Image (cartoon, rainbow, N blue to C red; front, side, top):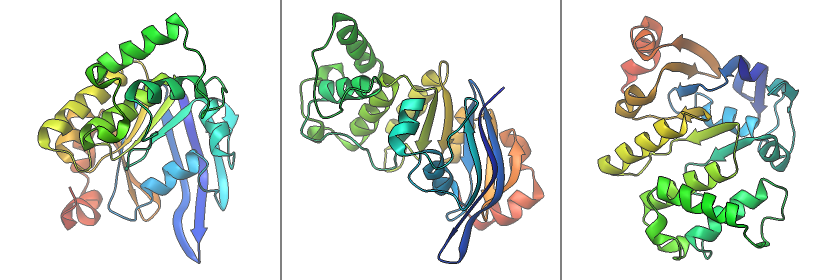
Length: 246
Protein backbone atom coordinates (compact mmCIF):
# COMPACT_ATOMS: atom_id res chain seq x y z
CA UNK A 1 0.00 0.00 0.00
CA UNK A 2 1.40 3.40 -1.00
CA UNK A 3 2.27 5.70 1.90
CA UNK A 4 3.45 8.46 -0.44
CA UNK A 5 2.06 9.23 -3.90
CA UNK A 6 3.25 11.94 -6.26
CA UNK A 7 0.82 12.54 -9.11
CA UNK A 8 1.63 14.58 -12.22
CA UNK A 9 4.10 16.74 -10.30
CA UNK A 10 5.55 19.59 -12.37
CA UNK A 11 7.89 22.34 -11.21
CA UNK A 12 9.13 25.22 -13.33
CA UNK A 13 11.58 27.86 -12.14
CA UNK A 14 12.55 30.86 -14.29
CA UNK A 15 11.37 29.07 -17.42
CA UNK A 16 13.24 25.83 -16.64
CA UNK A 17 11.30 22.61 -16.03
CA UNK A 18 12.84 20.74 -13.09
CA UNK A 19 10.15 18.09 -12.62
CA UNK A 20 7.98 17.20 -15.59
CA UNK A 21 4.61 15.53 -14.89
CA UNK A 22 6.26 13.13 -12.46
CA UNK A 23 4.38 10.11 -11.09
CA UNK A 24 6.05 8.35 -8.19
CA UNK A 25 5.05 6.29 -5.15
CA UNK A 26 6.66 4.75 -2.07
CA UNK A 27 4.97 1.87 -0.26
CA UNK A 28 4.64 1.67 3.50
CA UNK A 29 7.61 -0.07 5.22
CA UNK A 30 9.73 0.26 2.05
CA UNK A 31 13.33 1.44 1.72
CA UNK A 32 13.41 3.14 -1.68
CA UNK A 33 16.59 4.55 -3.20
CA UNK A 34 16.38 7.53 -5.55
CA UNK A 35 19.15 7.72 -8.14
CA UNK A 36 19.96 10.11 -10.94
CA UNK A 37 22.65 12.48 -12.21
CA UNK A 38 23.03 15.98 -10.81
CA UNK A 39 20.09 18.12 -11.92
CA UNK A 40 17.74 15.15 -12.32
CA UNK A 41 15.31 16.58 -9.75
CA UNK A 42 16.01 14.39 -6.70
CA UNK A 43 16.50 17.11 -4.11
CA UNK A 44 13.74 19.21 -5.68
CA UNK A 45 11.34 16.29 -5.28
CA UNK A 46 12.24 15.94 -1.61
CA UNK A 47 11.89 19.69 -1.10
CA UNK A 48 8.42 19.61 -2.63
CA UNK A 49 7.36 16.72 -0.40
CA UNK A 50 8.53 18.57 2.72
CA UNK A 51 7.03 21.93 1.74
CA UNK A 52 10.22 23.91 1.11
CA UNK A 53 9.01 24.46 -2.50
CA UNK A 54 5.57 24.56 -4.01
CA UNK A 55 4.86 22.73 -7.31
CA UNK A 56 3.63 24.41 -10.46
CA UNK A 57 1.05 21.65 -10.82
CA UNK A 58 0.29 18.14 -9.59
CA UNK A 59 -0.46 16.59 -6.20
CA UNK A 60 1.40 15.03 -3.29
CA UNK A 61 -0.61 12.58 -1.20
CA UNK A 62 0.76 11.26 2.09
CA UNK A 63 -0.99 8.65 4.21
CA UNK A 64 -4.21 9.31 2.30
CA UNK A 65 -4.08 13.12 2.75
CA UNK A 66 -3.30 15.76 0.13
CA UNK A 67 -0.30 17.70 1.46
CA UNK A 68 0.47 19.65 -1.71
CA UNK A 69 1.85 23.08 -0.86
CA UNK A 70 1.52 22.65 2.90
CA UNK A 71 4.00 24.47 5.15
CA UNK A 72 7.09 22.52 6.35
CA UNK A 73 5.90 22.50 9.99
CA UNK A 74 2.55 21.01 8.97
CA UNK A 75 4.26 18.30 6.97
CA UNK A 76 6.64 17.53 9.85
CA UNK A 77 3.70 17.17 12.21
CA UNK A 78 1.95 14.92 9.66
CA UNK A 79 4.84 12.46 10.04
CA UNK A 80 7.50 13.30 7.42
CA UNK A 81 11.06 14.08 8.57
CA UNK A 82 13.91 15.13 6.31
CA UNK A 83 17.64 14.80 6.73
CA UNK A 84 19.45 17.47 4.70
CA UNK A 85 22.85 16.98 3.08
CA UNK A 86 24.31 19.38 5.66
CA UNK A 87 23.38 18.34 9.23
CA UNK A 88 20.65 20.53 10.72
CA UNK A 89 20.76 20.84 14.51
CA UNK A 90 21.08 23.24 17.44
CA UNK A 91 24.82 23.80 17.59
CA UNK A 92 25.08 25.12 21.17
CA UNK A 93 22.72 22.58 22.72
CA UNK A 94 24.04 19.28 24.01
CA UNK A 95 23.65 16.08 22.04
CA UNK A 96 21.02 14.93 24.56
CA UNK A 97 19.05 18.20 24.33
CA UNK A 98 19.03 18.10 20.52
CA UNK A 99 17.28 14.74 20.64
CA UNK A 100 14.94 15.97 23.37
CA UNK A 101 13.92 19.05 21.33
CA UNK A 102 13.16 16.85 18.31
CA UNK A 103 11.06 14.50 20.43
CA UNK A 104 9.08 17.37 21.92
CA UNK A 105 8.64 19.17 18.59
CA UNK A 106 6.70 16.20 17.25
CA UNK A 107 4.17 16.81 20.05
CA UNK A 108 3.67 20.47 19.02
CA UNK A 109 5.77 21.68 21.93
CA UNK A 110 7.45 24.95 20.97
CA UNK A 111 10.78 23.70 19.68
CA UNK A 112 13.02 26.35 21.25
CA UNK A 113 11.60 25.86 24.76
CA UNK A 114 12.92 22.82 26.58
CA UNK A 115 10.20 21.27 28.71
CA UNK A 116 10.63 18.94 31.66
CA UNK A 117 11.58 15.46 30.52
CA UNK A 118 9.48 12.55 31.74
CA UNK A 119 11.10 9.28 32.79
CA UNK A 120 9.65 7.67 29.66
CA UNK A 121 11.14 10.37 27.44
CA UNK A 122 14.51 10.15 29.18
CA UNK A 123 14.60 6.37 28.63
CA UNK A 124 13.74 6.84 24.95
CA UNK A 125 16.42 9.51 24.43
CA UNK A 126 19.10 7.29 25.95
CA UNK A 127 17.90 4.33 23.90
CA UNK A 128 18.21 6.38 20.71
CA UNK A 129 21.64 7.72 21.65
CA UNK A 130 22.82 4.17 22.35
CA UNK A 131 21.41 3.13 18.96
CA UNK A 132 23.55 5.72 17.11
CA UNK A 133 26.51 5.17 19.48
CA UNK A 134 26.52 8.72 20.84
CA UNK A 135 25.51 8.06 24.45
CA UNK A 136 29.04 8.83 25.65
CA UNK A 137 28.80 12.30 24.01
CA UNK A 138 25.34 13.10 25.41
CA UNK A 139 26.42 16.08 27.55
CA UNK A 140 28.66 17.71 24.94
CA UNK A 141 27.58 20.58 22.65
CA UNK A 142 26.64 19.45 19.15
CA UNK A 143 29.27 21.70 17.59
CA UNK A 144 32.04 19.58 19.16
CA UNK A 145 31.05 16.50 17.13
CA UNK A 146 32.90 15.28 14.06
CA UNK A 147 31.20 15.36 10.65
CA UNK A 148 30.15 11.73 10.89
CA UNK A 149 28.91 12.09 14.47
CA UNK A 150 26.81 15.10 13.44
CA UNK A 151 25.17 12.99 10.73
CA UNK A 152 24.38 10.27 13.27
CA UNK A 153 23.00 12.83 15.73
CA UNK A 154 20.64 14.08 13.05
CA UNK A 155 19.48 10.51 12.41
CA UNK A 156 18.83 10.23 16.16
CA UNK A 157 16.80 13.45 16.05
CA UNK A 158 14.73 12.17 13.14
CA UNK A 159 13.97 8.89 14.89
CA UNK A 160 12.94 10.76 18.05
CA UNK A 161 10.18 12.58 16.18
CA UNK A 162 8.59 9.17 15.36
CA UNK A 163 8.09 9.86 11.64
CA UNK A 164 6.05 7.69 9.30
CA UNK A 165 8.40 8.61 6.43
CA UNK A 166 12.11 9.45 6.57
CA UNK A 167 13.66 11.39 3.67
CA UNK A 168 17.46 11.03 3.68
CA UNK A 169 19.30 13.26 1.22
CA UNK A 170 22.84 11.92 0.62
CA UNK A 171 23.53 11.05 4.28
CA UNK A 172 27.01 9.61 3.60
CA UNK A 173 28.41 12.67 1.81
CA UNK A 174 31.89 13.63 3.06
CA UNK A 175 32.31 10.52 5.21
CA UNK A 176 35.20 8.09 5.43
CA UNK A 177 34.52 4.56 4.21
CA UNK A 178 34.19 3.42 7.81
CA UNK A 179 31.69 6.21 8.48
CA UNK A 180 29.70 5.31 5.35
CA UNK A 181 29.46 1.69 6.45
CA UNK A 182 28.24 2.63 9.91
CA UNK A 183 25.66 5.00 8.39
CA UNK A 184 24.46 2.29 5.99
CA UNK A 185 24.06 -0.13 8.89
CA UNK A 186 22.06 2.46 10.86
CA UNK A 187 19.78 3.14 7.89
CA UNK A 188 19.28 -0.58 7.38
CA UNK A 189 18.20 -0.95 11.01
CA UNK A 190 16.01 2.17 10.90
CA UNK A 191 14.24 0.81 7.81
CA UNK A 192 13.04 -2.22 9.77
CA UNK A 193 10.46 0.01 11.46
CA UNK A 194 10.24 3.09 9.19
CA UNK A 195 9.49 3.89 5.57
CA UNK A 196 12.64 5.43 4.05
CA UNK A 197 13.29 7.36 0.84
CA UNK A 198 17.04 7.62 0.35
CA UNK A 199 19.02 9.74 -2.12
CA UNK A 200 22.49 8.23 -2.42
CA UNK A 201 25.28 8.38 -5.03
CA UNK A 202 27.69 5.80 -3.61
CA UNK A 203 26.79 2.64 -5.51
CA UNK A 204 28.43 0.41 -2.89
CA UNK A 205 25.99 1.79 -0.33
CA UNK A 206 23.08 1.55 -2.79
CA UNK A 207 23.85 -2.09 -3.49
CA UNK A 208 24.01 -2.78 0.24
CA UNK A 209 20.65 -1.14 0.99
CA UNK A 210 18.40 -1.05 -2.06
CA UNK A 211 15.53 -3.42 -2.62
CA UNK A 212 13.85 -1.06 -5.10
CA UNK A 213 15.38 1.82 -7.02
CA UNK A 214 13.87 4.73 -8.94
CA UNK A 215 16.09 6.55 -11.44
CA UNK A 216 15.23 10.15 -12.33
CA UNK A 217 16.42 11.94 -15.45
CA UNK A 218 15.40 15.44 -16.54
CA UNK A 219 12.59 15.49 -14.00
CA UNK A 220 10.98 12.22 -15.04
CA UNK A 221 11.17 8.58 -13.96
CA UNK A 222 13.65 6.93 -16.30
CA UNK A 223 13.48 3.43 -14.79
CA UNK A 224 12.27 1.61 -11.71
CA UNK A 225 12.87 -1.82 -10.24
CA UNK A 226 15.54 -3.79 -8.44
CA UNK A 227 19.10 -2.45 -8.63
CA UNK A 228 20.11 -5.21 -11.05
CA UNK A 229 17.14 -4.42 -13.30
CA UNK A 230 18.00 -0.74 -13.31
CA UNK A 231 21.72 -1.29 -13.92
CA UNK A 232 20.92 -3.61 -16.84
CA UNK A 233 18.54 -1.07 -18.40
CA UNK A 234 20.15 0.20 -21.63
CA UNK A 235 18.57 3.64 -21.32
CA UNK A 236 19.89 4.05 -17.78
CA UNK A 237 23.34 3.00 -18.92
CA UNK A 238 23.27 5.51 -21.75
CA UNK A 239 22.12 8.60 -19.83
CA UNK A 240 23.34 7.90 -16.30
CA UNK A 241 25.82 5.12 -15.64
CA UNK A 242 27.52 5.62 -18.99
CA UNK A 243 28.42 9.19 -18.06
CA UNK A 244 30.54 8.19 -15.13
CA UNK A 245 28.14 9.04 -12.32
CA UNK A 246 28.47 6.72 -9.34
